[in-house]
Image (cartoon, rainbow, N blue to C red; front, side, top):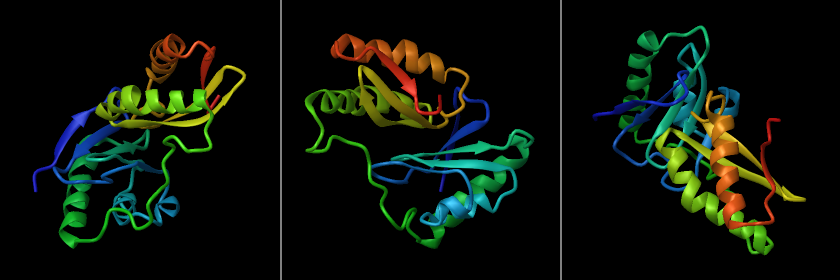
Length: 183
């Protein structure tokens, strides 16, 4: 198995592309071994000292290291863990995580927001090893969470404000502002 690695805009996160489906559809993020009970792959990676979080995308995973860890030391263990997981034949995730795509209960504006996020934003942030999750639309304010490499990335605020907010305001006049759920 050949696993490609790519840098992300977040220096604490590397993107690993195993050349096989990871999640297929949807995403999952784990910030601790306890949090990773539903993913054999994430549990395996959390056995490596220095791993802060694991984000699973459709065909990639993004691993964030602890601040005190070094990629030179971590990368071989991560690559070995990914290869061992795929060789084991175990599923990546046992319980499918529900996604935030448009529901029948959503009003028209929320459906438009989710559609734009799914078609225009998600593919772009996935290229950088991340994802974006819709939380709420209230009184003109859209609340989102950045995940994977995008969480904690130095440019995530600019992505939210200059990129996503401007795009949503252009297509949906009712949107006044985009905020991170972490604020």
